[in-house]
Length: 459
View 1 (cartoon, one colour):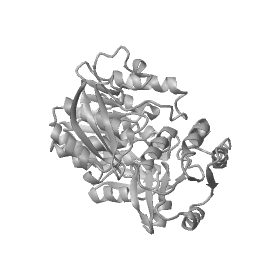
View 2 (cartoon, rainbow, N blue to C red):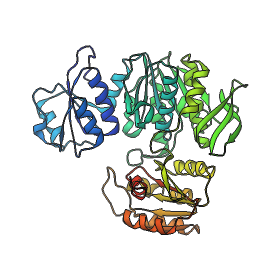
View 3 (cartoon, one colour):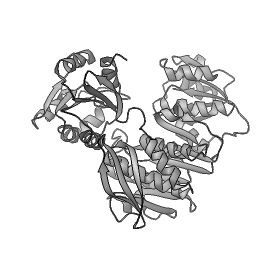
View 4 (cartoon, rainbow, N blue to C red):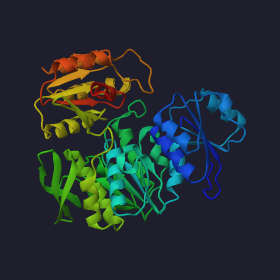
């Protein structure tokens, strides 16, 4: 594998530079004085920001974009061999790295690198930990899969030995990471267009955990049934967190304030500690925060800074993000696109003041919708009103094996009020006519469903 020498900046070309993760890596290299070029299918604010920083970016992908002065090419899992730029790179015999391989090499430059993994909660936890690092003034470098207001985007380049990044299991990309600390938040069945099932997913997380050296530490959710399989034969230090008192870090005296924000007493090694006040809701965010506290403790960060960072963290964009109010209807946007995540969002919404709960759900990928149809219906039935949009294809082609109407029909069998619409304008018109005073409206999914809320709010 090609190895970057960060003491000798070169010209790196990114195929698909506009993605949230690719753009972050490009920004890190730009600030390390590398020459950056790239291409993407369409323009965006992210692309414009990189251009303003000095990157040369082409809209549209063609062989001519691969110029003779390029030293290294980085590409994502979404780029296939028939991509004209990929094919041109092969023909020119240029060194090539995947996005994950590049991130792994960047990570190796930092003494205290933290990789945050898990089927759910990676972006929130990475953002939460970043907030704690900044509260402690340790000047971290951050790569997060969402927009975090406190760093003004999805990446921050610091000048210290601290680095925190998301570690995604899709295509086993996180197997390229060898961090100082690994966090595993949870392990669930997802990305079934790549994994054959939960057993293969568990093995994938086991391999990820095994990348830690004897000096490294795995901070892992001790409530998982698969914990013994994930941690078997590991030589690293292991610290557990979770809701059960069998964990090293766990909560007691849990309360939600009038805004739905969670508070609890921290217990470490069986001994009650400080009261923890979160600025976000949801029991799942209690476990997320426990992993952050465990990480900060391991790195010697003063607990005072940790608690202050958690108290001021208001969430990442698209994670139960309040978009505004329409009349007396509160509009929330959330990235949940898996049944487990939907249930967590519903629990958070339940503790948020409201009259009736509305959700506009956009299923994400045909594979996931087909495989988890029953689980999706079961999770969504808890809302008062459900609107289902067409499936967001993302990287997939429509096989005709599943349709959004199938999900709507299954939800209807539970007795829940559900409607299917094929267009966003139709959804917006229906909501304007039917949402009432003090209702809570959530746009939900990993695609572009957030546009419904933004259009209603006139954004």
